[in-house]
Length: 422
Image (tube, rainbow, N blue to C red; front, side, top):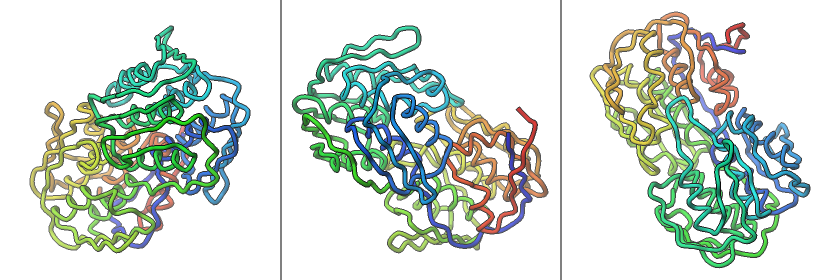
């Protein structure tokens, strides 16, 4: 098991390209099950979650290869299994994404229930109700979702909450369903839009892409996606920009989509950072006193829940008090006790972290509890006095490719070392 050792006090500066989106590619990969053949997805990040999904698809009978350039090849001509076992799903909740494609293409699916996670349960009810609306028979047996349908049929489906996962699974299934499906209150995250565009490239007929109302005209069959370009990772981009702000540095990100980061960029400007957005580049400068700014997470285009932990870390470096409220996952504050080990003054009340910034942080040993919590601890270590050790960075490796290498390119003093800690 690895850990990071960080010597704080370095200012981040320099230029970096943003990696391909983890969350998007995890939705694109199962879509290949809908059309047996060879698919290619460019700009695929080399991450633990990508390899978990690759192993799951391999279990189903697919062949998966990722080359050094980031091009992912998926050959889905020999699917022989229709089960996503617990050993895969327990590692990554996105494994439930195989439910819709297997059901739509092969008429059956057996997918382990994901269970909870480090910041509270995320129920799959909306996924199951969507499949049932499309005509599937769905039962829960011995911890597995069992779904069957000789042919799915289009339906009118309204989501009580704009769930990204449920929207993704319904898009898969409705693309091959007989007739039309109208999905309202759909998630409009960029990752959903990326999937919809991939499905259209495969021959699906989808109207309203990028809006909360999707009209899917089912087709008898889809064709393999010859080559799909993954979108930039907006969460990695936000993390790097926040790191630059925390160290009062200047960082220029390339190969990024600023439109995917609208709310985060607005908040950074409110804090007092200077932003220069030009095409697919964002340059951030923070060379003056910053002000505390509250955030409340919300579905896209609101402030992302995946950035709230990093924002709390930023607020530690600002004189004054800020409130970080998470309306998506109200218990997603497992990182707070670890920040307190660094000297942070943070209290959690219900679904809000109240951050009292301006105190001096001091290096200590801290432990990651989930992916984005790991990022907040690394960012805090960049500004803490002395040495910070961040344990259990396998969480971080799920969503950030070689984070220590990329931060070193910006001037951070950070190393990955092996440890006997479990």
